[in-house]
Image (cartoon, rainbow, N blue to C red; front, top):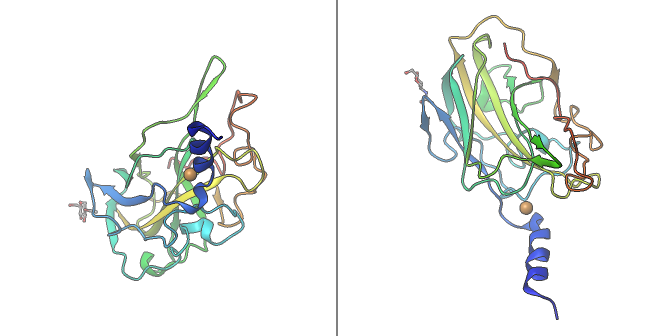
Length: 227
Ligand SMILES: *[C@@H]1O[C@H](CO)[C@@H](O)[C@H](O)[C@H]1NC(C)=O
Ligand SMILES: [Cu+2]
């Protein structure tokens, strides 16, 4: 007869079909906005994206267009963020990217160049790799030198609990429509495309986070552009 612990363990493994934590709202001017006002709503309840070669890696399933999503005005150099509907409960890094829209953010499909503006990885202590826990929001600075204009702002958490086999990492993604004002004349980079910028075999994407305990972690994607 199976123990309760085993049953719970099995339930935790079949998480692909369950609703997960979602990045539902944008934080700007120190205020959390309404759910899906500025954040494009995905249509998969965050049953996570796992194929890095899919267009879904940009803005999640259903996020490539979102005519009902508004565009938030944000000031270059200010603190912006994303809040979740529930705290993150799988280990893994958080990364934030931007991509300039050819015209308006609301009609942009994210097929252009993406640059990274923030990331949060693990810390290491004797024999341990420690991940951020109880994260219910993540805030960061939009570089002061970001050129003014409309962008997609993309946040992702990459869950690594099943990442020891290729295709096992889970990508929890949301994109917001933003209009940067008060910007500068920086040249954001290095850039990647999505899909394209990640490989399923990247050392930060295919990794056994448990054993042997890693002593370093390579954040996926390009270096952070700090302006
Ligand atoms: C933030 O404040 C600026 C300046 O008052 C305003 O123009 C902008 O709309 C605000 N953005 C949001 C998302 O509330
Ligand atoms: Cu899960």
